[in-house]
Length: 296
Length: 314
Image (tube, rainbow over all chains, first blue to last red; front, side, top):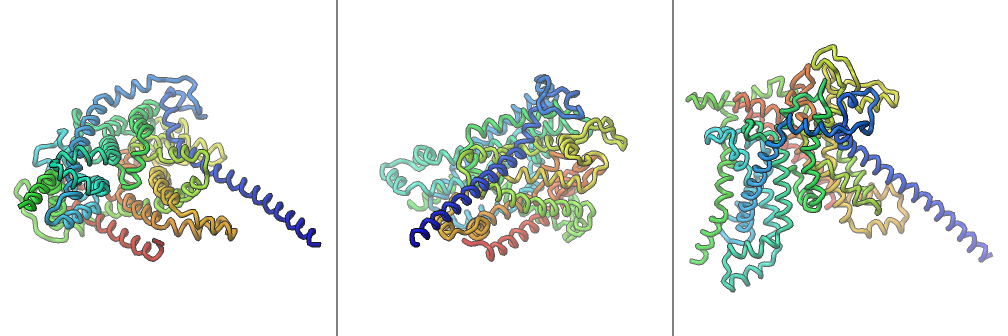
């Protein structure tokens, strides 16, 4: 009798685990299916961009779309490069990006160091005020800044694209947090040894905060690459035009009868550097982004 | 002596940042408020020596402006559609990603990809996908040569092609395209934050639930969502702030026309309104609109924080 109960119980258990196993397999298949479908949707625009950029205009306009180009036409890329004058735009954007990143890093490091290590009157109040400005939408600054740079005679120069955005409160905040994690004993020991503040900052703190500095560099470069509104307002001449503005200006029409293969080739060329950076420096981008929530 | 030297040194370190902040952040705050309260202020006229009276005229004009009302409506609608949809989808994807082991890293990378894009450039790709290639651009008798890929797919499943963004397209269709694009763009950040939150939830809660053989849905609603609520509040708040500043994604899809060829400006947003006023030298109106935008963002954030105070488990 007792034995019977035991075997029945075992049977029950086997049935339960069997059902559970089927349930678990179903659940996992469902999860993977969902993720793969979503990944497909997320990737589709990129796929469509690349294959469209390789098609001939006639093939692109077929009423039954082809999902892989019959003839791969690389000449679209050459056309795109010349129509949008991409070479010049690349150079402009790289110049603005590099100069503003270097200057911005120097300012951020100095400011973050002062807030993290040095003592002065009103330190906490000043820092709180800085953080407060982060709440204000950028458009509010732009209106006055536009007049300011006009009065300074900076319209259509590189300066106007670089200087107004050199100080980022968010980057200062990020780096200060990082500096604060470095033990103060290190600083005091350096003081005893007679190391100057400045030398300590460059020899000890900057190397220790390198990952944060790399994140800032990438975000700043991406910001230059993606900036659109401000450059359109203040430096939209041939010589200083940035890449996004150039792309938008060269292909003004988005609907109707457009030579999409060439347009998509241009879009792919503009997107490519971002992807390359992403592939090699994913870790830094993702850690920087999760703390900011701001593009660029 | 030593202390005063420290003081002096600190200000040297701070000097570059302070100077730039004074010119490009502090002064703009003061000046923008000033211009907003000067009747019909215009930079051009001010340079010509004109004096402006103090008053609320700019705010009145902006609010009564039909264009502004439509910009406000577009912005609010975009927020109300995109924030809930993208948050919900991101939550589902993050939970699903957290439940798997193989392929997790690869899929995570794929879902992050839309973040590292240029929103104008990829907007042009979306426009291509939704476009109907017509041979007479911008006129009523556009001849449809081929529907865009989205319409191809709709036709494949037996549906009727829709005029999404071309001449004579409906407002609802335009909005639909914008919502799809903005959600696609907003997903990566939200997934990243939510997945980070999920991975930091203590495994013990799930083990306890397993011992009690709690059903999966109950685990989701009673453990995962409450413990994730600070992260959810964060992505919702930043989502609303970003949503109210929406502009470049519309430019990406519709160009600077901000609407289909027959109805320019139909999809203009608050930020777009501010820039239009600015580029026509109406700084007073632009400032008033910017302050209104700031006020809206502030109120929405406060409401969000109030709601999350009641709902969020810290």
